[in-house]
Image 1 (cartoon, rainbow, N blue to C red):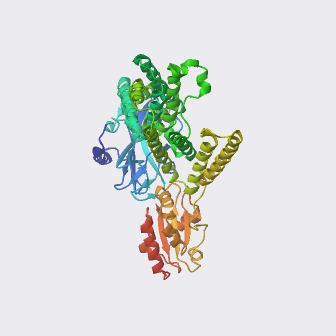
Image 2 (tube, rainbow, N blue to C red):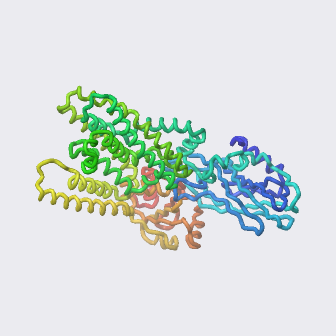
Image 3 (tube, rainbow, N blue to C red):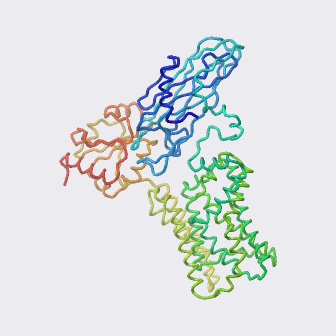
Length: 611
Protein backbone atom coordinates (compact mmCIF):
# COMPACT_ATOMS: atom_id res chain seq x y z
CA UNK A 1 0.00 0.00 0.00
CA UNK A 2 1.29 3.46 -0.83
CA UNK A 3 2.15 5.17 2.41
CA UNK A 4 0.31 8.38 3.32
CA UNK A 5 3.54 10.38 3.48
CA UNK A 6 4.35 9.36 -0.09
CA UNK A 7 0.96 10.15 -1.64
CA UNK A 8 1.35 13.98 -1.90
CA UNK A 9 4.66 13.53 -3.73
CA UNK A 10 3.06 10.86 -5.88
CA UNK A 11 0.19 13.16 -6.80
CA UNK A 12 2.63 15.89 -7.83
CA UNK A 13 4.54 13.40 -9.97
CA UNK A 14 1.32 12.21 -11.59
CA UNK A 15 0.19 15.75 -12.35
CA UNK A 16 3.44 16.33 -14.23
CA UNK A 17 4.02 12.94 -15.81
CA UNK A 18 0.69 11.44 -16.84
CA UNK A 19 -1.37 12.47 -19.83
CA UNK A 20 -2.28 16.15 -19.53
CA UNK A 21 -5.95 15.42 -20.20
CA UNK A 22 -6.21 14.04 -16.67
CA UNK A 23 -7.27 17.44 -15.38
CA UNK A 24 -7.23 18.50 -11.75
CA UNK A 25 -10.32 20.23 -10.37
CA UNK A 26 -9.56 22.58 -7.47
CA UNK A 27 -12.54 23.46 -5.27
CA UNK A 28 -10.71 25.55 -2.69
CA UNK A 29 -10.72 22.78 -0.11
CA UNK A 30 -10.15 19.67 -2.24
CA UNK A 31 -8.30 19.04 -5.48
CA UNK A 32 -9.91 16.21 -7.49
CA UNK A 33 -8.26 14.14 -10.21
CA UNK A 34 -9.43 10.92 -11.90
CA UNK A 35 -6.80 8.56 -13.37
CA UNK A 36 -7.42 5.29 -15.33
CA UNK A 37 -5.33 2.13 -15.02
CA UNK A 38 -4.82 1.84 -18.78
CA UNK A 39 -4.13 4.12 -21.72
CA UNK A 40 -6.23 2.19 -24.24
CA UNK A 41 -9.08 -0.12 -23.27
CA UNK A 42 -10.22 -2.89 -25.62
CA UNK A 43 -13.99 -3.26 -25.92
CA UNK A 44 -15.24 -6.06 -23.65
CA UNK A 45 -12.55 -5.38 -21.03
CA UNK A 46 -12.60 -3.75 -17.59
CA UNK A 47 -10.21 -1.20 -16.17
CA UNK A 48 -9.78 0.51 -12.86
CA UNK A 49 -10.29 4.15 -12.03
CA UNK A 50 -8.69 6.06 -9.16
CA UNK A 51 -10.24 9.30 -7.92
CA UNK A 52 -7.50 11.20 -6.11
CA UNK A 53 -8.41 13.80 -3.51
CA UNK A 54 -5.84 16.22 -2.16
CA UNK A 55 -7.39 17.93 0.88
CA UNK A 56 -6.09 21.35 1.87
CA UNK A 57 -4.01 21.36 5.09
CA UNK A 58 -6.02 22.33 8.13
CA UNK A 59 -9.25 20.96 6.65
CA UNK A 60 -10.97 17.61 6.56
CA UNK A 61 -14.01 16.14 4.83
CA UNK A 62 -16.50 13.67 6.26
CA UNK A 63 -16.08 9.99 5.41
CA UNK A 64 -18.53 8.17 3.16
CA UNK A 65 -20.31 6.94 6.32
CA UNK A 66 -20.10 9.67 8.98
CA UNK A 67 -20.71 8.57 12.56
CA UNK A 68 -23.07 11.54 13.01
CA UNK A 69 -26.14 11.17 10.80
CA UNK A 70 -26.47 14.98 10.52
CA UNK A 71 -23.16 15.29 8.66
CA UNK A 72 -22.91 15.18 4.86
CA UNK A 73 -21.07 12.05 3.59
CA UNK A 74 -18.44 12.04 0.87
CA UNK A 75 -19.84 10.37 -2.24
CA UNK A 76 -18.65 9.74 -5.80
CA UNK A 77 -21.20 9.26 -8.59
CA UNK A 78 -20.92 8.92 -12.37
CA UNK A 79 -22.98 10.05 -15.34
CA UNK A 80 -24.35 7.00 -17.20
CA UNK A 81 -22.96 6.13 -20.64
CA UNK A 82 -24.56 3.52 -22.90
CA UNK A 83 -22.31 0.49 -23.14
CA UNK A 84 -20.23 1.44 -20.07
CA UNK A 85 -20.97 0.23 -16.54
CA UNK A 86 -19.44 1.43 -13.29
CA UNK A 87 -18.78 -0.98 -10.45
CA UNK A 88 -18.84 -0.52 -6.70
CA UNK A 89 -17.09 2.55 -5.36
CA UNK A 90 -14.42 1.64 -2.81
CA UNK A 91 -13.85 4.29 -0.15
CA UNK A 92 -10.81 4.17 2.16
CA UNK A 93 -10.95 3.69 5.91
CA UNK A 94 -11.33 7.06 7.64
CA UNK A 95 -9.33 8.49 10.49
CA UNK A 96 -11.10 9.12 13.80
CA UNK A 97 -10.57 12.50 15.41
CA UNK A 98 -12.31 14.71 17.94
CA UNK A 99 -12.82 18.40 17.12
CA UNK A 100 -13.78 21.44 19.15
CA UNK A 101 -17.36 21.28 17.89
CA UNK A 102 -17.94 17.55 18.54
CA UNK A 103 -18.55 15.63 21.74
CA UNK A 104 -17.15 12.40 20.28
CA UNK A 105 -14.77 11.28 17.58
CA UNK A 106 -15.82 11.72 13.96
CA UNK A 107 -14.89 9.64 10.92
CA UNK A 108 -13.09 11.93 8.46
CA UNK A 109 -10.65 12.04 5.55
CA UNK A 110 -7.54 14.24 5.66
CA UNK A 111 -4.53 15.00 3.48
CA UNK A 112 -4.54 12.70 0.41
CA UNK A 113 -7.26 10.15 -0.27
CA UNK A 114 -7.76 7.54 -3.00
CA UNK A 115 -11.20 6.32 -4.03
CA UNK A 116 -11.49 3.41 -6.47
CA UNK A 117 -13.99 1.90 -8.84
CA UNK A 118 -13.94 -0.51 -11.78
CA UNK A 119 -15.30 0.35 -15.23
CA UNK A 120 -16.46 -2.24 -17.75
CA UNK A 121 -16.88 -1.61 -21.50
CA UNK A 122 -19.27 -3.81 -23.48
CA UNK A 123 -17.77 -5.97 -26.23
CA UNK A 124 -19.80 -4.29 -28.99
CA UNK A 125 -18.85 -0.75 -27.91
CA UNK A 126 -17.80 1.46 -30.83
CA UNK A 127 -14.06 2.28 -30.71
CA UNK A 128 -13.08 5.90 -30.14
CA UNK A 129 -12.38 8.47 -27.49
CA UNK A 130 -14.94 9.03 -24.72
CA UNK A 131 -15.01 11.18 -21.60
CA UNK A 132 -16.07 9.67 -18.29
CA UNK A 133 -17.82 12.27 -16.15
CA UNK A 134 -18.43 12.07 -12.43
CA UNK A 135 -19.23 14.17 -9.38
CA UNK A 136 -17.62 14.35 -5.96
CA UNK A 137 -19.99 15.48 -3.21
CA UNK A 138 -18.44 16.43 0.11
CA UNK A 139 -18.55 18.76 3.10
CA UNK A 140 -15.36 20.43 4.29
CA UNK A 141 -14.68 21.40 7.89
CA UNK A 142 -11.81 22.70 9.95
CA UNK A 143 -11.25 22.25 13.68
CA UNK A 144 -13.92 24.81 14.58
CA UNK A 145 -16.66 24.88 11.96
CA UNK A 146 -18.06 23.29 8.80
CA UNK A 147 -18.71 24.84 5.40
CA UNK A 148 -21.47 24.49 2.85
CA UNK A 149 -21.59 21.11 1.08
CA UNK A 150 -20.15 21.12 -2.42
CA UNK A 151 -20.67 19.00 -5.54
CA UNK A 152 -17.64 19.08 -7.81
CA UNK A 153 -17.66 17.59 -11.34
CA UNK A 154 -14.61 15.78 -12.67
CA UNK A 155 -13.86 13.97 -15.90
CA UNK A 156 -11.26 11.72 -17.48
CA UNK A 157 -10.88 10.95 -21.20
CA UNK A 158 -10.19 7.35 -22.23
CA UNK A 159 -9.74 5.67 -25.63
CA UNK A 160 -11.66 2.53 -26.49
CA UNK A 161 -9.99 0.24 -29.06
CA UNK A 162 -11.47 -2.75 -30.91
CA UNK A 163 -12.06 -5.97 -29.01
CA UNK A 164 -9.23 -8.48 -29.06
CA UNK A 165 -6.40 -6.00 -28.64
CA UNK A 166 -4.21 -6.08 -25.55
CA UNK A 167 -4.92 -3.75 -22.68
CA UNK A 168 -1.89 -1.53 -22.02
CA UNK A 169 -1.56 -0.83 -18.27
CA UNK A 170 -0.70 2.66 -17.02
CA UNK A 171 -0.26 4.42 -13.67
CA UNK A 172 -0.01 1.03 -11.94
CA UNK A 173 1.66 2.52 -8.86
CA UNK A 174 -1.70 4.08 -7.97
CA UNK A 175 -3.56 0.76 -7.93
CA UNK A 176 -1.37 -1.40 -5.72
CA UNK A 177 -3.96 -1.13 -2.94
CA UNK A 178 -7.04 -1.52 -5.14
CA UNK A 179 -9.29 -3.92 -3.15
CA UNK A 180 -9.78 -6.47 -5.94
CA UNK A 181 -6.01 -6.78 -6.62
CA UNK A 182 -5.15 -8.48 -3.32
CA UNK A 183 -5.47 -12.24 -3.73
CA UNK A 184 -8.19 -13.64 -1.52
CA UNK A 185 -9.20 -10.25 -0.15
CA UNK A 186 -12.79 -10.33 -1.33
CA UNK A 187 -13.33 -13.88 -0.13
CA UNK A 188 -11.77 -13.14 3.22
CA UNK A 189 -13.87 -10.07 3.92
CA UNK A 190 -17.04 -11.03 2.10
CA UNK A 191 -19.76 -8.60 3.00
CA UNK A 192 -17.31 -6.06 4.38
CA UNK A 193 -16.28 -4.23 1.22
CA UNK A 194 -17.58 -0.70 1.00
CA UNK A 195 -18.22 -0.51 4.73
CA UNK A 196 -16.80 2.01 7.14
CA UNK A 197 -15.83 0.73 10.56
CA UNK A 198 -15.50 2.70 13.77
CA UNK A 199 -12.17 2.62 15.59
CA UNK A 200 -13.46 -0.09 17.96
CA UNK A 201 -14.91 -2.17 15.12
CA UNK A 202 -11.70 -1.90 13.11
CA UNK A 203 -9.65 -3.23 16.06
CA UNK A 204 -12.08 -6.11 16.50
CA UNK A 205 -11.96 -6.87 12.77
CA UNK A 206 -8.16 -7.06 12.87
CA UNK A 207 -8.45 -9.66 15.63
CA UNK A 208 -10.96 -11.80 13.73
CA UNK A 209 -8.86 -11.57 10.54
CA UNK A 210 -5.91 -13.14 12.37
CA UNK A 211 -7.70 -16.49 12.57
CA UNK A 212 -10.59 -18.17 14.33
CA UNK A 213 -8.60 -19.71 17.19
CA UNK A 214 -6.82 -16.43 17.85
CA UNK A 215 -10.23 -14.73 17.91
CA UNK A 216 -11.56 -17.36 20.37
CA UNK A 217 -8.73 -16.64 22.78
CA UNK A 218 -9.13 -12.87 22.38
CA UNK A 219 -12.90 -13.00 22.98
CA UNK A 220 -12.33 -15.14 26.08
CA UNK A 221 -10.01 -12.44 27.40
CA UNK A 222 -12.60 -9.77 26.49
CA UNK A 223 -15.13 -11.64 28.61
CA UNK A 224 -12.71 -11.91 31.50
CA UNK A 225 -12.01 -8.17 31.24
CA UNK A 226 -15.74 -7.41 31.47
CA UNK A 227 -15.49 -8.24 35.16
CA UNK A 228 -13.75 -4.88 35.59
CA UNK A 229 -16.72 -2.93 34.19
CA UNK A 230 -19.79 -1.63 36.03
CA UNK A 231 -22.10 -3.95 34.07
CA UNK A 232 -21.15 -7.05 36.04
CA UNK A 233 -21.38 -5.59 39.54
CA UNK A 234 -24.83 -7.17 40.03
CA UNK A 235 -23.42 -10.65 39.36
CA UNK A 236 -21.30 -10.69 42.51
CA UNK A 237 -24.08 -10.32 45.12
CA UNK A 238 -26.46 -12.50 43.07
CA UNK A 239 -23.91 -15.30 42.87
CA UNK A 240 -22.97 -15.07 46.53
CA UNK A 241 -26.55 -14.97 47.78
CA UNK A 242 -27.75 -17.80 45.52
CA UNK A 243 -24.92 -20.32 45.97
CA UNK A 244 -24.16 -19.28 49.54
CA UNK A 245 -27.62 -20.48 50.49
CA UNK A 246 -27.02 -23.96 49.09
CA UNK A 247 -24.95 -26.02 51.47
CA UNK A 248 -23.16 -28.87 49.76
CA UNK A 249 -20.13 -30.60 51.23
CA UNK A 250 -19.21 -32.42 48.03
CA UNK A 251 -17.16 -30.30 45.68
CA UNK A 252 -18.17 -32.35 42.64
CA UNK A 253 -21.86 -31.39 42.62
CA UNK A 254 -20.92 -27.84 43.64
CA UNK A 255 -18.59 -27.57 40.64
CA UNK A 256 -21.26 -29.01 38.32
CA UNK A 257 -23.84 -26.48 39.51
CA UNK A 258 -21.32 -23.67 39.08
CA UNK A 259 -20.42 -24.89 35.59
CA UNK A 260 -24.00 -24.95 34.31
CA UNK A 261 -24.51 -21.53 35.93
CA UNK A 262 -21.65 -20.15 33.81
CA UNK A 263 -22.93 -22.00 30.71
CA UNK A 264 -26.29 -20.28 31.22
CA UNK A 265 -24.56 -16.90 31.15
CA UNK A 266 -22.63 -17.91 28.03
CA UNK A 267 -25.75 -19.02 26.19
CA UNK A 268 -27.31 -15.59 26.66
CA UNK A 269 -24.11 -13.98 25.33
CA UNK A 270 -24.14 -16.32 22.33
CA UNK A 271 -27.71 -15.17 21.65
CA UNK A 272 -26.39 -11.61 21.72
CA UNK A 273 -23.90 -12.54 18.99
CA UNK A 274 -26.54 -14.44 17.01
CA UNK A 275 -29.05 -11.59 17.09
CA UNK A 276 -26.32 -9.10 16.19
CA UNK A 277 -25.31 -11.16 13.17
CA UNK A 278 -28.90 -11.51 12.00
CA UNK A 279 -29.95 -7.96 12.75
CA UNK A 280 -27.24 -6.41 10.61
CA UNK A 281 -27.00 -3.23 12.67
CA UNK A 282 -25.06 -1.87 15.59
CA UNK A 283 -26.62 -2.51 19.01
CA UNK A 284 -24.74 0.46 20.36
CA UNK A 285 -27.18 2.71 18.48
CA UNK A 286 -29.83 1.54 20.94
CA UNK A 287 -28.10 3.62 23.59
CA UNK A 288 -28.83 6.68 21.47
CA UNK A 289 -32.53 5.93 21.97
CA UNK A 290 -33.70 7.64 25.19
CA UNK A 291 -36.41 5.04 25.80
CA UNK A 292 -33.91 2.18 25.71
CA UNK A 293 -31.71 4.03 28.19
CA UNK A 294 -34.72 4.61 30.47
CA UNK A 295 -35.53 0.87 30.45
CA UNK A 296 -31.92 -0.09 31.25
CA UNK A 297 -31.77 2.53 34.00
CA UNK A 298 -35.00 1.34 35.62
CA UNK A 299 -33.85 -2.30 35.57
CA UNK A 300 -30.53 -1.42 37.22
CA UNK A 301 -32.26 0.76 39.83
CA UNK A 302 -34.63 -2.11 40.55
CA UNK A 303 -31.65 -4.39 41.19
CA UNK A 304 -30.23 -1.73 43.48
CA UNK A 305 -33.53 -1.67 45.38
CA UNK A 306 -33.22 -5.42 45.88
CA UNK A 307 -29.84 -4.86 47.49
CA UNK A 308 -31.52 -2.45 49.93
CA UNK A 309 -34.02 -5.16 50.90
CA UNK A 310 -37.05 -4.26 48.77
CA UNK A 311 -37.21 -7.81 47.36
CA UNK A 312 -34.98 -10.82 46.72
CA UNK A 313 -33.64 -11.82 43.31
CA UNK A 314 -34.45 -15.53 42.92
CA UNK A 315 -35.50 -17.92 40.21
CA UNK A 316 -39.29 -17.55 39.85
CA UNK A 317 -41.00 -20.12 42.08
CA UNK A 318 -43.57 -20.97 39.39
CA UNK A 319 -40.71 -22.00 37.10
CA UNK A 320 -38.79 -23.89 39.73
CA UNK A 321 -41.83 -25.83 40.97
CA UNK A 322 -41.95 -27.57 37.60
CA UNK A 323 -38.57 -29.12 38.34
CA UNK A 324 -39.36 -30.29 41.87
CA UNK A 325 -36.22 -30.92 43.94
CA UNK A 326 -34.05 -29.81 41.03
CA UNK A 327 -34.77 -26.18 41.91
CA UNK A 328 -31.74 -26.21 44.20
CA UNK A 329 -29.62 -28.32 41.90
CA UNK A 330 -28.28 -28.31 38.35
CA UNK A 331 -31.46 -27.10 36.66
CA UNK A 332 -31.91 -24.27 39.15
CA UNK A 333 -28.30 -23.16 38.65
CA UNK A 334 -28.72 -23.21 34.88
CA UNK A 335 -31.89 -21.11 34.99
CA UNK A 336 -30.21 -18.69 37.39
CA UNK A 337 -27.29 -18.43 34.93
CA UNK A 338 -29.73 -17.56 32.14
CA UNK A 339 -31.31 -14.94 34.40
CA UNK A 340 -27.96 -13.36 35.23
CA UNK A 341 -27.02 -13.36 31.52
CA UNK A 342 -30.20 -11.46 30.70
CA UNK A 343 -29.27 -8.91 33.37
CA UNK A 344 -25.75 -8.39 32.00
CA UNK A 345 -26.07 -8.73 28.21
CA UNK A 346 -28.00 -5.54 27.30
CA UNK A 347 -25.74 -3.44 29.52
CA UNK A 348 -22.57 -5.11 28.25
CA UNK A 349 -23.60 -4.53 24.63
CA UNK A 350 -23.07 -0.81 25.14
CA UNK A 351 -19.52 -1.41 26.39
CA UNK A 352 -18.42 -4.01 23.82
CA UNK A 353 -19.96 -1.89 21.07
CA UNK A 354 -17.08 -2.57 18.69
CA UNK A 355 -17.52 -6.36 18.92
CA UNK A 356 -21.30 -6.27 18.68
CA UNK A 357 -21.25 -3.76 15.83
CA UNK A 358 -18.66 -5.72 13.85
CA UNK A 359 -20.58 -8.99 14.11
CA UNK A 360 -23.69 -7.16 12.94
CA UNK A 361 -21.98 -5.46 9.98
CA UNK A 362 -20.13 -8.54 8.76
CA UNK A 363 -23.15 -10.79 9.27
CA UNK A 364 -20.95 -13.63 10.64
CA UNK A 365 -23.88 -15.41 12.28
CA UNK A 366 -22.39 -18.77 13.27
CA UNK A 367 -18.91 -17.46 14.04
CA UNK A 368 -20.37 -14.54 16.02
CA UNK A 369 -22.50 -16.91 18.08
CA UNK A 370 -19.49 -19.06 18.99
CA UNK A 371 -17.27 -16.07 19.76
CA UNK A 372 -19.83 -14.54 22.08
CA UNK A 373 -20.38 -17.91 23.80
CA UNK A 374 -16.65 -18.04 24.53
CA UNK A 375 -16.80 -14.46 25.75
CA UNK A 376 -19.51 -15.53 28.20
CA UNK A 377 -17.23 -18.31 29.44
CA UNK A 378 -14.51 -15.74 30.05
CA UNK A 379 -16.92 -13.52 31.94
CA UNK A 380 -18.12 -16.44 34.05
CA UNK A 381 -14.70 -17.85 34.96
CA UNK A 382 -14.41 -15.95 38.29
CA UNK A 383 -17.95 -16.99 39.20
CA UNK A 384 -17.14 -20.61 38.45
CA UNK A 385 -14.70 -20.55 41.36
CA UNK A 386 -16.91 -18.33 43.48
CA UNK A 387 -19.91 -20.65 43.10
CA UNK A 388 -17.86 -23.86 43.46
CA UNK A 389 -16.42 -22.84 46.79
CA UNK A 390 -19.46 -20.95 48.02
CA UNK A 391 -19.79 -23.51 50.83
CA UNK A 392 -16.77 -21.81 52.40
CA UNK A 393 -19.12 -18.93 53.08
CA UNK A 394 -20.83 -21.15 55.61
CA UNK A 395 -17.76 -20.78 57.83
CA UNK A 396 -18.40 -17.05 58.02
CA UNK A 397 -21.03 -15.55 60.33
CA UNK A 398 -24.35 -16.03 58.52
CA UNK A 399 -26.18 -13.31 60.35
CA UNK A 400 -25.39 -9.84 61.48
CA UNK A 401 -25.34 -6.33 60.12
CA UNK A 402 -22.17 -6.92 58.14
CA UNK A 403 -24.15 -8.90 55.54
CA UNK A 404 -26.74 -6.12 55.35
CA UNK A 405 -23.94 -3.58 54.93
CA UNK A 406 -22.37 -5.58 52.09
CA UNK A 407 -25.67 -5.73 50.19
CA UNK A 408 -26.22 -2.00 50.62
CA UNK A 409 -22.68 -1.39 49.40
CA UNK A 410 -23.50 -3.22 46.17
CA UNK A 411 -26.76 -1.29 46.01
CA UNK A 412 -24.82 1.98 46.02
CA UNK A 413 -22.60 0.65 43.22
CA UNK A 414 -25.68 -0.22 41.16
CA UNK A 415 -27.10 3.28 41.60
CA UNK A 416 -23.78 4.54 40.23
CA UNK A 417 -24.09 2.19 37.24
CA UNK A 418 -27.60 3.53 36.53
CA UNK A 419 -26.30 7.10 36.62
CA UNK A 420 -23.38 6.08 34.37
CA UNK A 421 -25.78 5.03 31.61
CA UNK A 422 -28.46 7.65 32.21
CA UNK A 423 -26.51 10.92 32.28
CA UNK A 424 -25.02 10.87 28.73
CA UNK A 425 -28.48 10.51 27.19
CA UNK A 426 -30.07 12.99 29.60
CA UNK A 427 -27.52 15.66 28.69
CA UNK A 428 -28.97 15.75 25.15
CA UNK A 429 -32.57 16.20 26.31
CA UNK A 430 -33.82 19.77 26.35
CA UNK A 431 -36.20 19.20 29.27
CA UNK A 432 -33.75 17.40 31.53
CA UNK A 433 -35.86 17.85 34.68
CA UNK A 434 -38.86 16.24 32.99
CA UNK A 435 -36.64 13.37 31.81
CA UNK A 436 -35.34 12.80 35.36
CA UNK A 437 -38.81 13.01 36.91
CA UNK A 438 -40.33 10.73 34.29
CA UNK A 439 -37.70 8.04 34.82
CA UNK A 440 -38.07 8.38 38.60
CA UNK A 441 -41.87 8.02 38.32
CA UNK A 442 -41.54 4.87 36.21
CA UNK A 443 -39.09 3.35 38.69
CA UNK A 444 -41.12 4.47 41.69
CA UNK A 445 -44.35 3.02 40.28
CA UNK A 446 -42.63 -0.29 39.50
CA UNK A 447 -41.00 -0.53 42.93
CA UNK A 448 -43.86 0.71 45.14
CA UNK A 449 -46.62 -0.91 43.12
CA UNK A 450 -45.22 -4.33 42.28
CA UNK A 451 -41.68 -5.15 43.44
CA UNK A 452 -41.93 -4.42 47.16
CA UNK A 453 -42.82 -7.70 48.86
CA UNK A 454 -42.35 -6.69 52.48
CA UNK A 455 -44.66 -8.63 54.86
CA UNK A 456 -47.68 -7.02 56.50
CA UNK A 457 -49.57 -5.60 53.52
CA UNK A 458 -53.31 -6.27 53.56
CA UNK A 459 -55.05 -7.45 50.41
CA UNK A 460 -56.85 -4.13 50.12
CA UNK A 461 -53.62 -2.15 50.37
CA UNK A 462 -51.95 -4.43 47.82
CA UNK A 463 -54.69 -3.52 45.35
CA UNK A 464 -54.28 0.16 46.17
CA UNK A 465 -50.51 0.10 45.64
CA UNK A 466 -50.96 -1.75 42.33
CA UNK A 467 -53.28 1.01 41.10
CA UNK A 468 -50.84 3.61 42.42
CA UNK A 469 -47.98 1.88 40.62
CA UNK A 470 -49.83 1.82 37.30
CA UNK A 471 -50.73 5.52 37.61
CA UNK A 472 -47.14 6.44 38.53
CA UNK A 473 -45.74 4.49 35.58
CA UNK A 474 -48.20 6.14 33.19
CA UNK A 475 -47.28 9.56 34.61
CA UNK A 476 -43.60 8.71 34.15
CA UNK A 477 -44.15 7.66 30.54
CA UNK A 478 -45.99 10.92 29.88
CA UNK A 479 -43.27 13.07 31.50
CA UNK A 480 -40.48 11.19 29.75
CA UNK A 481 -42.17 11.37 26.36
CA UNK A 482 -42.82 15.10 26.81
CA UNK A 483 -39.18 15.67 27.80
CA UNK A 484 -37.82 13.67 24.86
CA UNK A 485 -39.86 15.71 22.38
CA UNK A 486 -39.43 19.08 24.07
CA UNK A 487 -37.84 21.92 22.13
CA UNK A 488 -35.50 24.57 23.53
CA UNK A 489 -37.40 27.75 24.21
CA UNK A 490 -35.23 29.71 26.62
CA UNK A 491 -34.18 32.17 23.89
CA UNK A 492 -36.93 33.89 21.91
CA UNK A 493 -35.58 32.99 18.48
CA UNK A 494 -37.03 34.40 15.29
CA UNK A 495 -36.47 32.54 12.05
CA UNK A 496 -35.37 34.45 8.98
CA UNK A 497 -38.14 34.59 6.39
CA UNK A 498 -36.78 36.86 3.67
CA UNK A 499 -36.68 40.13 5.60
CA UNK A 500 -34.30 42.89 4.56
CA UNK A 501 -31.65 44.25 6.91
CA UNK A 502 -33.77 47.38 7.34
CA UNK A 503 -36.72 45.27 8.45
CA UNK A 504 -34.61 43.24 10.87
CA UNK A 505 -33.20 46.39 12.49
CA UNK A 506 -36.45 48.33 12.55
CA UNK A 507 -36.56 48.35 16.35
CA UNK A 508 -34.18 49.85 18.87
CA UNK A 509 -32.44 46.58 19.75
CA UNK A 510 -29.19 45.33 18.26
CA UNK A 511 -29.59 42.19 16.14
CA UNK A 512 -27.78 38.89 16.43
CA UNK A 513 -27.91 36.49 13.45
CA UNK A 514 -26.98 32.82 13.69
CA UNK A 515 -26.35 31.34 10.22
CA UNK A 516 -26.68 27.58 10.86
CA UNK A 517 -27.43 24.29 9.09
CA UNK A 518 -28.82 20.94 10.20
CA UNK A 519 -25.65 19.18 9.02
CA UNK A 520 -23.46 21.54 11.08
CA UNK A 521 -22.08 19.77 14.18
CA UNK A 522 -20.72 23.01 15.79
CA UNK A 523 -24.18 24.55 15.38
CA UNK A 524 -25.77 21.68 17.28
CA UNK A 525 -23.13 21.96 19.99
CA UNK A 526 -23.90 25.66 20.44
CA UNK A 527 -27.60 24.81 20.75
CA UNK A 528 -26.78 22.25 23.45
CA UNK A 529 -24.38 24.42 25.43
CA UNK A 530 -23.97 28.10 24.53
CA UNK A 531 -27.60 29.01 23.83
CA UNK A 532 -28.79 27.24 26.99
CA UNK A 533 -26.39 29.08 29.30
CA UNK A 534 -28.34 31.26 31.82
CA UNK A 535 -26.12 34.31 31.24
CA UNK A 536 -26.54 34.05 27.47
CA UNK A 537 -30.30 33.58 27.83
CA UNK A 538 -30.56 36.70 30.01
CA UNK A 539 -28.45 38.81 27.63
CA UNK A 540 -30.49 37.58 24.65
CA UNK A 541 -33.48 39.56 25.95
CA UNK A 542 -31.63 42.75 24.92
CA UNK A 543 -31.22 41.54 21.31
CA UNK A 544 -33.38 40.56 18.42
CA UNK A 545 -32.22 36.95 18.00
CA UNK A 546 -32.44 35.70 14.40
CA UNK A 547 -31.73 32.19 13.14
CA UNK A 548 -30.97 31.85 9.43
CA UNK A 549 -31.41 28.27 8.19
CA UNK A 550 -28.74 27.53 5.55
CA UNK A 551 -29.35 23.77 5.32
CA UNK A 552 -30.96 23.99 1.90
CA UNK A 553 -31.20 27.73 1.23
CA UNK A 554 -33.69 29.09 -1.25
CA UNK A 555 -32.79 31.94 -3.60
CA UNK A 556 -33.70 34.63 -1.05
CA UNK A 557 -31.71 33.03 1.76
CA UNK A 558 -28.74 32.39 -0.54
CA UNK A 559 -28.75 36.06 -1.59
CA UNK A 560 -28.85 37.03 2.08
CA UNK A 561 -25.88 34.76 2.78
CA UNK A 562 -23.95 36.27 -0.13
CA UNK A 563 -24.71 39.77 1.13
CA UNK A 564 -22.89 38.95 4.37
CA UNK A 565 -20.27 36.71 2.75
CA UNK A 566 -21.36 33.60 4.68
CA UNK A 567 -19.53 30.43 3.60
CA UNK A 568 -19.01 28.49 6.84
CA UNK A 569 -21.32 27.28 9.59
CA UNK A 570 -22.03 28.61 12.08
CA UNK A 571 -21.43 32.26 11.19
CA UNK A 572 -22.28 34.59 14.07
CA UNK A 573 -23.03 38.21 13.14
CA UNK A 574 -24.01 41.23 15.26
CA UNK A 575 -25.77 44.29 13.79
CA UNK A 576 -26.20 47.65 15.45
CA UNK A 577 -29.76 49.09 15.55
CA UNK A 578 -28.83 51.27 12.56
CA UNK A 579 -28.12 48.15 10.46
CA UNK A 580 -24.31 48.35 10.42
CA UNK A 581 -22.44 45.13 11.12
CA UNK A 582 -19.99 45.01 14.03
CA UNK A 583 -17.40 43.31 11.88
CA UNK A 584 -14.85 42.89 14.66
CA UNK A 585 -17.38 40.67 16.47
CA UNK A 586 -18.06 38.39 13.50
CA UNK A 587 -17.09 34.82 14.30
CA UNK A 588 -17.18 31.61 12.27
CA UNK A 589 -17.27 28.41 14.30
CA UNK A 590 -18.17 27.24 17.76
CA UNK A 591 -18.17 29.75 20.63
CA UNK A 592 -18.52 28.61 24.23
CA UNK A 593 -20.94 30.28 26.67
CA UNK A 594 -18.39 32.58 28.33
CA UNK A 595 -16.89 33.82 25.06
CA UNK A 596 -20.28 34.33 23.44
CA UNK A 597 -21.59 36.25 26.46
CA UNK A 598 -18.51 38.49 26.20
CA UNK A 599 -19.27 39.14 22.51
CA UNK A 600 -22.86 40.01 23.41
CA UNK A 601 -21.76 42.56 26.03
CA UNK A 602 -19.36 44.15 23.56
CA UNK A 603 -22.17 44.37 20.98
CA UNK A 604 -24.39 46.10 23.53
CA UNK A 605 -21.63 48.57 24.36
CA UNK A 606 -21.00 49.32 20.67
CA UNK A 607 -24.75 49.87 20.21
CA UNK A 608 -25.03 52.17 23.22
CA UNK A 609 -27.35 49.74 25.00
CA UNK A 610 -25.17 48.63 27.90
CA UNK A 611 -26.89 49.32 31.24
